[in-house]
Image (cartoon, one colour):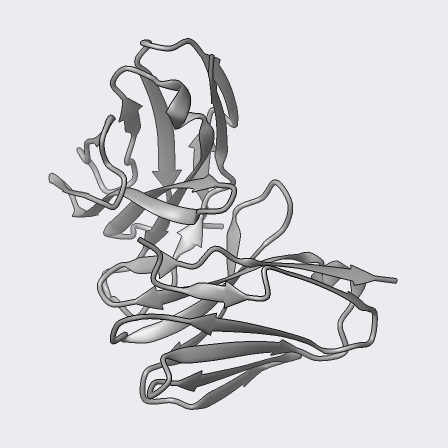
Length: 113
Length: 108
């Protein structure tokens, strides 16, 4: 069955370190998204991609970057982790048509000490 | 900034009762979607209603959309303990923008 996976599921890191969170989907979806979820804020969009070599900034993109070298993967990199980036991160994908729903991964819980 | 705002923030009911959650949004949309999130899990899509639709049903779920008031409601009928979760509305233009969610607790 098609799915979307994230790794690691839990990560503890130190302030200033570079961290990469992986997202892999097997639906062959063109569109992929990264969100962070914090209490009181719901889900906020970090970066998104509409296809290979396409990346776009979302609402809260500062301190994050993504790259899209193939259809299946959209890794999220924290260039220099900050305590404010402690959060739960969700990856999602959907097909090209904008009317379609998004499929979410299980999330990565990141703690920055 | 959040597009959708859910009301109430939290709701506690007994099994068998109906649960109603409301969502208000700010700008024009293509469609509005509702998602459920169980504790510690990712979001799961429940139902999508397009901007030219007023009501939609799916099993025990009933969604309404009033584009003139920029609001939507999600009704879960005959609730079960397994319905305990957070529920989010999300408005769609080219991207999904999520509200802050309603935490539903259904007591057996």
